[in-house]
Amino acid sequence: MMFMSFSISQAMTVMYWGRLSDRIGRRPVLIAGLIGTLAVSILFGVCKSFTMALLVRLAAGVFAGNAAVMKSAMAEIADDTNRSRMMALLPLTWNVGSMLGSGVGGIFSNPAQQLP
Image: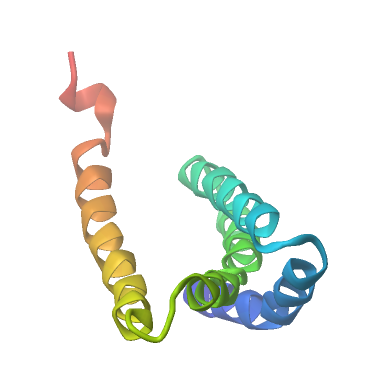
């Protein structure tokens, strides 16, 4: 249910992020998405109930809806000689970040017990 809420809210907001980026530009939309993702990531770490965690996860999906904006910005930056390489880098960086983020999260889990 937790993963489903993220995907549903992301799917419902992706078109709005795209329209907003066409209206005000890619950079402000990407910055808003990054700040929102940072905020909900911190909030998810301090959730005390399932309901709060579910709502925060929904908000995370809303801010992740700008993934299509990242792809369109990369397509606008690239030319025909490097477009395929740039499009391949997006999932690569996403997966490397997921692996490193999980490791860092594991290191800092229960910091009061692990650190003096």
